[in-house]
Image (tube, rainbow, N blue to C red; front, side):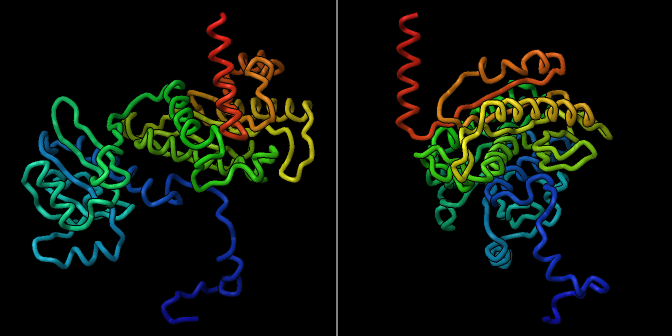
Length: 363
């Protein structure tokens, strides 16, 4: 064992097992992609700055995502400064171009007071115009934050980032999930890094489709409500949660608001190996979801308890038929019933859209 690797003491004999052991719970966003962590962490440090009494009321700050090697190289160049405490909210942000890594704990920055176009030109000159970038405009009465996922060179891809904190309604959560559904889940075409379908043409979901969907939803919630923690797989006496949206910041010191508890369920016509799933099994799966959402939400004082079903069955049965057997119980338990249908091919989606449009025109 290399001398640089610290000893585990009495646990040294278990090193191999400990290294290979899976992480049983997920915290907030630490395991997500660098671009996601960058976006969320920069938004959070800006909020901390804005509530500081010495915060700026005008000016622009640019944050460019770089890796640690690049950040260290930039720190050695003349005219740059290393700021280790940028994450605290106590340090000035505007009038500077910040080069940060995904954690946004520290910044290497250079002062900049030119025009907007000069700022974009500066990023071009640094050969960083293609790096993920966030631009913060401090202003009264409301500041703005913009995210350029492909860098400022592709300015039309800009995405506005919500800076305000506060109440998160069920409608807000559904809108965030709906956006993920439309961009990633509705069909298998151009889906991101998490596998959902094993063989979509033959209606075979991936064995762990729930985990892939959970990851997509985590990203949507983390970027949509970046002042909140998105807690996944939290174990308790009543079982293990899927997702929680928790706010430890906007309620004041010592106040934690559990905005929403999400229980995720995948509905299938068949398993990953082709075995058919009966209607009674599906009904029981949904009933379990209602009971889990109620139990987990109650024990955590969640304001919203939501059953979120991602329907990968061969045919779209509709919400009424899918939830008929649990509707009364869910209403009494105050668990909302939500469903999104995942089409096996883009062609099936287009056919369904056309049929819906024609039916509406007749009605």
